[in-house]
Image (cartoon, rainbow, N blue to C red; front, top):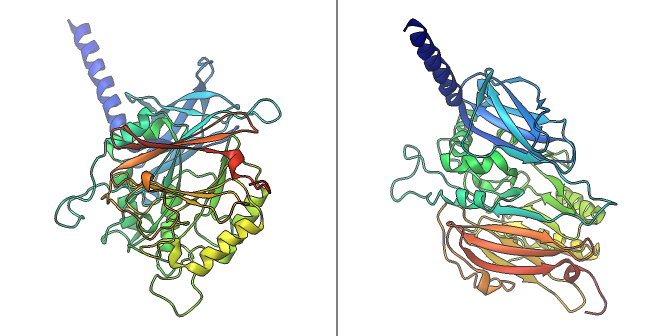
Length: 447
């Protein structure tokens, strides 16, 4: 009887310890960037804790690897960013999280992948990625009165069920409130509150994530380069997201890029250098000449069949309203003219902001290929039907004014890649689809 009592007591102690270790995790784990030789693993704890990850090749589970150990601290929101740096190309890995020496278990997969080494060997692999923007997570004590602005959180499970290789967040990924944007404490609270959403956790755990920002995860509504907390905004963004690089022009902000298979993604910063929407006393800019010149040079260096340019607001729309690029006509013309002058092929803009989804297609004459601009918004914030009546380049059949996300698939041989765009509603039901062939985005005198 005494032995039985001891066994029961030990069992309770083990169970209590396990439960306690689960409770030490505030949000995550999340998978950040992936390359052929390393990947970023992210987690946030509830208090200062010792954190590390173990991981193993799914086809060879007998050999485990371990990240460095990191002690989370309050001044950094108890966030740990650790690198899995013993991986090989083209592998699927299962990972395990340990907090204060105890394994943290989840009921959903915790996996990541390394990118495939295909160059000089095979055609590039098929790529499947998700896009979306405008994710408002309600918090009554800080929200404005009236109907809650956020809803439809099941959309994150719908994205998870599509099993994308990665997700590209297109800005307004969290919504700073009036109580948040004037202090580092406020930034930490808002980013933590959004990242901790229960419905988001499975998607974070097994899909790689990349992001840009727009005004609401940078500062106040319509915020610009005069925002006094912009360095804090940049610090918080880098702390909570897992891009492989930032500040490509060495001037502050979050400009960067990454590659996946034969695709190239350019992540632009439309806030850090921005002139106020109401300041017309000087030459106006949204991106700034240095960022644009870096982009043109990087685009010209890229041999990707599709070059995706991610930016917080609509670029091609001719509607000079809201915060569209058309409200900065001189700089917009400079960017588009440079793309044409440099004969850069395969350009597709990806953006959010507008609280509805739609595709724009710009084709000036029969000798040049069209430019496309895919706006995808919103995930959970307020949605608005908008006919974009002043946008000369809109494809009217693609306008959709409810919660939605995009799934972009690129497939086919290296010399004939095809982009298949699918838009889904919050429940994962397809709304519309469009195919774009890479060969149709090349210059030709025979058009």
